[in-house]
Image (cartoon, rainbow, N blue to C red; front, side):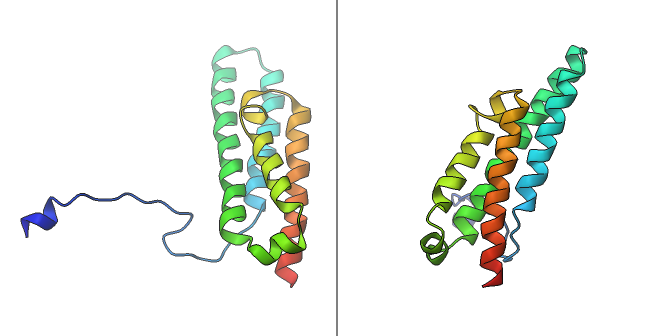
Length: 133
């Protein structure tokens, strides 16, 4: 009995506690839209406290974009999708990089946010095509 109480535990995490089968690129898009709005708000505000809070939130949203894209890439898309849409690996890679330190996470460039939104839209187009099949 004591052995079970003091046994080492393993921590795991997943998109869901049970694979729910609910996936949608809209989650990544909403976060990317938030990033773009925050970039505009920072540009229009001189309050250093506001700007600091906005930058922290923008970085968090960038991480969420990457998370949502990775969930699609690792949990939803399967080998037949990658065969039919060979550009999918590159699209996800480019989108996550646009959300990363060299992209919206580390930049206040609205054009980078627009590029991120465009990549998410390309991924979403493929996603919805796979749902029709």
